[in-house]
Length: 426
Ligand code: ARG
Image 1 (cartoon, helix red, strand yellow):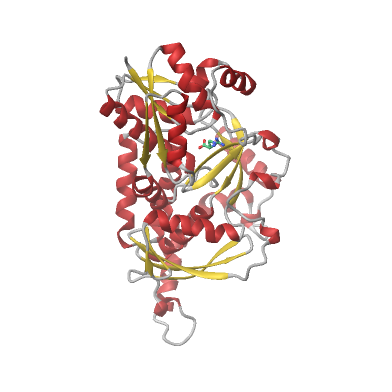
Image 2 (image 1 turned 180 degrees about the horizontal axis):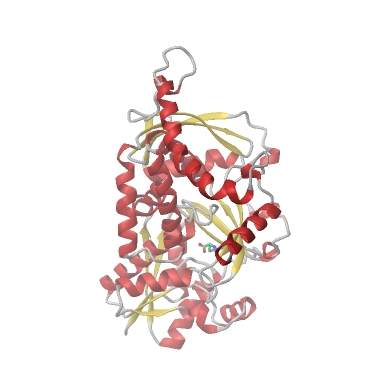
């Protein structure tokens, strides 16, 4: 019989989907459980799929690939959506899509399936990625198709003897991986409501932290963290370690009203301790090693890059082009950053690099100053030249000089407009 490869999480939706797909499409289900650092017992989840009726169940450890090909490039780019969301969920989707396609090819499946609803970004990310990588594969999204409420699903599960862990009675929808935890639904749908304590799992309440501050040194090589406190450490271990260390201080809580690709505003809470610390540290090292122009232009690229990830366009030429720019900027972003963790707060307190552009001789106000103070006069003269020229020709004659030209009030601006409008007629 023809088969479909289902991204299986072990939750209610994908558990019900195993039986529903069989009934509706008459396809045998191969369940794939992908570990992107979601800290749960993957084998146990995977075994449940076969109990429910999957003909085969596979666990794929995607952690290393996730960090190497998705998390680190996003960190190097400084990709944070709308200035707030470090993109944990969004980054894992193209990897999961790729792994689904890979398994589908190995198994000779004709379709892939995922548990996304019809309202979110994730369906777009999955479908666009799968269509791009394997246009011949059919995509089945049971939750988008079946129109069942949660209660209907529970009834369906009971009817079909699908074992469901009732412990997952949480009022929230949660997605998590190494780079962060995303929480929505329930009371959080009211943007005026403060997130209750039970929303959080990775971070302590910053107000009840009693720990003394600690310092950590993060070493980067070409924009990638390679060591923590002097010890070389594998990528995902470093992220795990920082999630737990910074989490203890209540660092990394984010409350975001975000603009979904499908046009909805939604309220999501994120916990991303490691992402918050690493972005801050990486940014600090760039501050030391990139020129003013690189810093400025890279901010634009970072925003574009974040949008592209959020909007599910990972497998695109635009992505390759932006990534090429980012990689080029990282060739001198090597060095060490010292961070201080204290209640709810991650502070950058030191940075050093062999490629530092910081020159004490130029910066110092003490002896040893090498900056040419006289050259400043010539520089200022030329820098001001276009401004003084324009002020003489246009601004001073039309609005006059009353104390402070730049502090012009609206009346004056309107008068100025009238004067200039009138003059051609006169
Ligand atoms: N809003 C985030 C995104 O679009 C996370 C989506 C999944 N969130 C969840 N709680 N299930 O990337």
